[in-house]
Figure 1 (cartoon, rainbow, N blue to C red):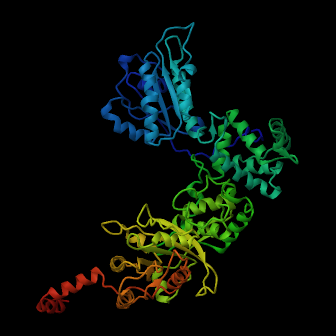
Figure 2: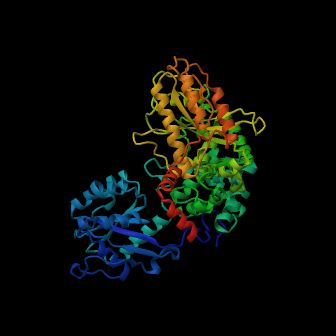
Figure 3: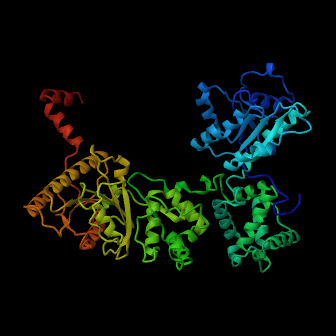
Length: 635
């Protein structure tokens, strides 16, 4: 075996599970004939072909790398569409057939089949197999020319192959070539890594390669040296790269990209040129072996085995937080890019699949700097939010940008809130506060003020989906003056009540109920919400502190507001409403009170009888006394 990077390869690290190749197409495009020719080494006349074959194994001598291949025939009848869709969804590759003498079968590829695959979100390699009956040996049809428009509109098409014609003597060999190509395309697809329209690496592939480059070049001032190349090859293929071969590779890169070589090693640009050269030389197996060895799947995301799921296994009332060690790593990563302004995030996540914060719920969840960037606190707050909501994704991106030796040390699971209440204290560093309230109470204005947005008179409470706002808040309570991350979640109220599951309620550390202090109906609605939420949480077994918030204090309060609110909160055992004015910016005291309530989870819990207790009382009052005596005696 040659000791060469990308040329002398060890065994592939790909999966040995069978490759499923599904054959689809219009009627009379010889789907079944294609399978039979490949499997039996014979071409059968049409009368001898069955309507459809059962699952068929491709002979092992035609299978690449001893990976078994299952060939799946499909029906062309409209009534069997559901079965075809099921098979296509489970396919590793698709062979799409058409007959060259029937233009309508070619048209159906672009008019029906390819749109169907996109609709089903099937993103597997496609091999187009053309059946020909045109007898013209001296002027054969150019299959590449005929299918060029289709290939330009669908990059998933790997290749177009003409597998049958009357003058061709070895039809079986061509049929086998169709499935061998489909298998190789399934195992080492070009679609996820290379854009054949622009002739360039795809962004997610570039991100993966940058992470791999960092792993092997960071100890050498980000220059991939001979040793780095050799270490990469040993890990991927089990063999080193000989110095002479390494110099040969570096020289070939320098000829293509002079700036790709520095100090007798490869820069990141040079490394990307080298990988592009591998693809152009049809050495996709080399690239995919490197990618899979370093933990990537066919979507160029880290495989599940790379994510330590056991490190954040938890009960519904537990949460996941970043450890001090992880926060230190994130701070160092941030400071590498903190002078880049709004472009910082894109640069920071250049070794990740994409920026995880470009969409909801993260995009507008934190405070921005004057130039549209993120402060360190805002950056860490967003990361804490992602860890709280989606710890698996948080760990994946943490691995991509921080390269930890032990990803499980990046997160920890908090103590159950039930135990916090027994101990009468909580030391969670990330507090999640649910914000309830009737429409136009001032919930959105409260969240906007929390993340430094200017007040807007246009009240948008109740519009859109639930949103988050996250920031760090100074604290002088149990944690000794350190800042905590406060996550505010605005809960939307539907006509039929809150659409909250028990598990969703379990994640709430503190609930605040906002009402418009100038509107008595808003106050009454808020009190009803306290009763409703407290009852649901009590029945579910997940209780939490609740606070009332009197918003819009810049307006005149409704008559008897103070008396009514004080009496009502005293009756249910929570604090009097906290006055705020988002318009005047008078809200900071509320956030400190939320943290205080979270630190003392046994206080401010509404004393409202649950439905379960009311039902038991009703049953007990209905059961005759003699039944109770009988029950006690028999017991």
